Length: 233
Image 1 (cartoon, rainbow, N blue to C red):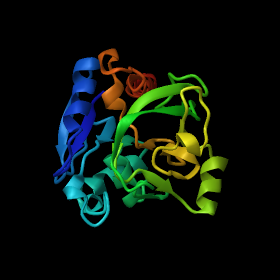
Image 2: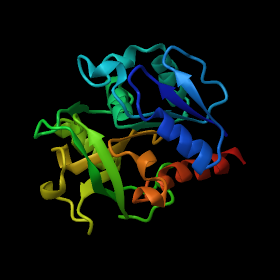
Image 3: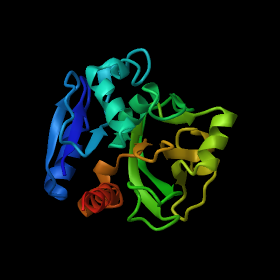
Image 4: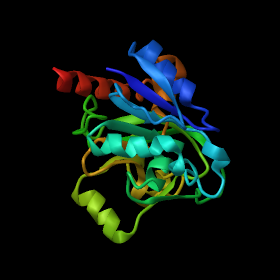
């Protein structure tokens, strides 16, 4: 199997993701420049965090026009595994691969800190190694992580079990008190209806080794690897 890490002008978590896949998990990985369109041979594409194109206009609004996005849309349409982290999540929203939009944090400040998130759906290729309701300690670093979708869209997310992670307390309590950015319904991560595209604001690549203060994010990537190994046999 092989992973691809997309690099946009302004990406700053691409090397972190590359390191986790190559050195922590020991899997083949390559960088994909935003003007490249060839995804042949890849099993999973990761859109990393950062500030693609300087976050001009809106976060992800310019990146969605990059040549690579057309290939990613096709890749996802054929069932390919896609992960969007932070800015990558924002790009997936702008590209229409995931529903909803991202607004500025409600306090209008950049937030960089560890948070707790609750695993609301462990029946996905991204969360298969977590227990139902497992609490994860994973850092966030964003200015626009306030997820929003209209009432009909929220109902659809709930009806289809597309909400994967919610912000919570260290004991798993989900309410506005533990919502760092104002995200609707404490949403921290969602998947598409086909369940092959994940978008999340927390950074699992920054919590993939115990030396970083938490290894909880490691199991997102490990879950993907387990899924890919199973489907390739």
